[in-house]
Amino acid sequence: MDGPLWTGFLCLQCIREKEVGVVEDLGQFKKLIKEGPSCIFWPLQSVVGRLSLRVQQLDVLCETKTKDNVFVQVGVAVQYRVVTESAYDAWYRLTSPTR
Image (cartoon, rainbow, N blue to C red; front, side, top):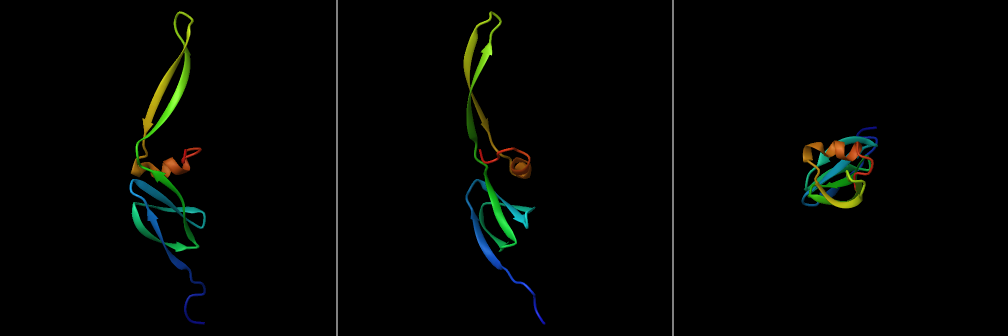
């Protein structure tokens, strides 16, 4: 028998601007793909997630006790973003990376 025993398909995945895609190969991390069109070897490879590289804001309401035993509520706005070089850590080490 000549030729490959199994053939797959090239699939074109398009990642939006200011996003990075996480590609897995049979359930194992393979690579990060940047914005624009990219080819993956489907069904062995798949884009399992996309991380936004935009600045995001998380509004938190904190209750704290002052020195004179008064409870006050303080609104805090935390701004964060995923750095491209740390996208692997952001996807695999955080408990809910899409939130």
